[in-house]
Amino acid sequence: MAYYKRIKELREDNDLTQRQIANILDMPQPQYFRYEQGYRDIPTDILIRLAQLYHTSTDYILGLTDCAVPYRTK
Image (tube, rainbow, N blue to C red; front, side, top):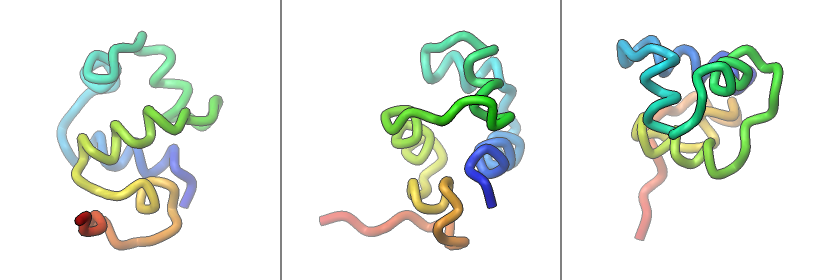
């Protein structure tokens, strides 16, 4: 699954709007829209912030795993 589909699903599952996520990430809503539509690659720092926001791993967002549970850290 492409990351842009995952970030849309995560947003919708958490009952958030694109505008709300854009505000959390301190960016214009059209910029976030481009990430969610796959028009632009998502920067690493934004990817990490989204994983933290949704309490998941970057691997899950990127579609490298279907396990939404984040990795344990030391």
